[in-house]
Length: 101
Image (cartoon, rainbow, N blue to C red; front, side, top):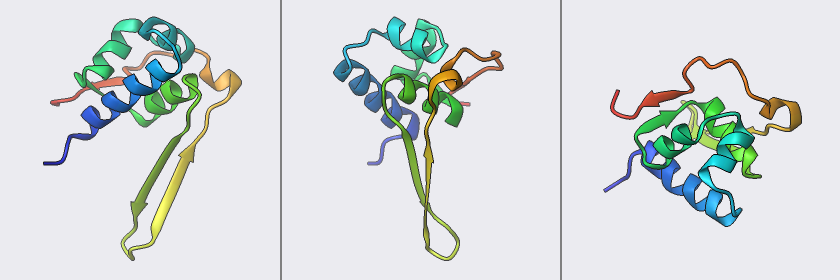
């Protein structure tokens, strides 16, 4: 049985955060978020936007790398890398969506 993307991200985010020795609060601060937002993501209670995923991963020293196949079967790869000022807190427009929505 295949796991839902929000759950997969939750597991990987929590593992990466622990490997880096960061608390949820420390990761949240680096990503311009709150600790409860990080907790909801790690519990797979919310689905992050691409921007939120990229910001969290960058704050933990990782990149967001997405691969998919186009209509012709060609593999397309998107790598999102955020550095420096791009990690500064942004206007809050609801970076989280309910996982069951």
